[in-house]
Image 1 (cartoon, rainbow, N blue to C red):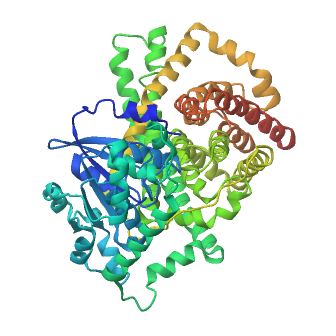
Image 2: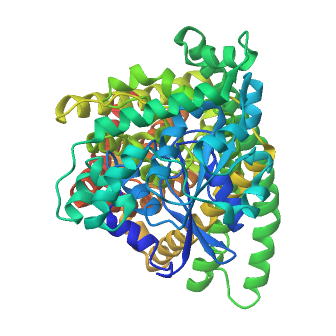
Image 3: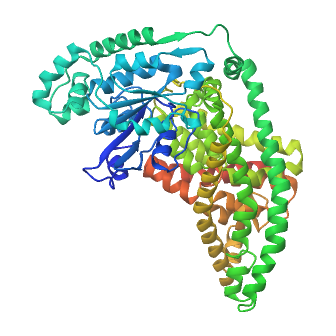
Length: 616
């Protein structure tokens, strides 16, 4: 949940007297594209609602530009709206990004901002989608009725953005209902801020309390009249000329219909499997890890360092030994994990950019309700296959604290990140489809059991799924590549130091003899309970730092096929990485974080022990 102090922290570097341009709009209207264009910065741009869950800001000329979470109205019904409300009401200029395809929906927020008396300029975005769907909009008439500039744009193609920039100074207060203006004028004698006066009339409890007043109980009346006014505007400016469904509309319906949507989902997952598990995990990694790093880089770095530091000395062992900071860390991060991470984020970016993810959410909604979630939870769960840390933050888009806990627990317990997933795929694919199904089946059963039990014992119910389906579009290669690069680079920045720390720790344990003692100490678990080789203890120690680090450690251990499957199940269910734990504490609090972290130890070794008893 984003609290007020979080907002203050994020905006602490914004000068108090800075002129602020606030980007506001409904979810998935394209605000982040405008933010990137204004500031030259990059925030995640995706074709699904709820991408922006944090506040981003940057500079454009003499202005501070602030991106806000997508909202349908300025109010206090949920976390995103509270965040957006306080920023919008403090704006000098609002650039209202409006989805031309859903004009009747988006204009409600537009009219509300106009009623607040804030200067506004409208970017009428996705005009190409509207045209493709046979929707014609009289832009001049719309501008005249609203009383503010309206500029047609196709932001993803950089059309119209320059005009929005050039006409910022033309932003002005638009046409508002005369009767409402009269009520506002009366209240302004006490409140002195038109935006907050409007919110008090609309019964916003937080703003009313701030002014030590009661709400005016006029929300329903004001909302009804605003909706009527929007409908009247739509009737005058929109003409729908479509006569039949086009292929994209048909495909969209097929994707959310279980009869056709499930086969499509299986087909897409199979393509991703072939891309990551077969092509990247085997062909590409064989070349990068085996030829480049193990074959060329490691002998080279050992030759350089070995001139001054003997490899069998304590320092040599730590730097260039079996678990060396300059050998194993570099090979694992760049040779083994980076190609897998790039492959996964490329596939995920294509799914995001095409608009397929929200359709998956609609498709699986009924199934996820059995686990105490709704279809919206599929977004953090899928993102978890990229990075559990980032996905844990994304659980903010879920509707209740209960859903956030269940989703976070499922992420922490059962979802392997992209790097870990790639290693798992690389290890298990050569073992044949029967053991592949065994691994997937066990993880799936644990996933369903945990969700079902949490749904059963946690008080409360799932909230309903309310999600707009964005238009399907061909992924834009520039955005896909930029997003893949941004996230892969973030992985290297986060994982590199942690891997080096883990290698240093293992190296210190090795040169002091503590590693062998530790391996012997946990032997009752590794060799007794799990029936694995003693050396697997090293992989689990590495897994405490990061699970993918631990999974990578399994690649060098000689095991039977069933032992490999068992070890992969255990490392999948093992404790979340250090970065995830830190985010877990921040997002869910100490109690929940300890429950999930402690529970993962019990779950991983408990399931592994049962497997060993039954299979080995």
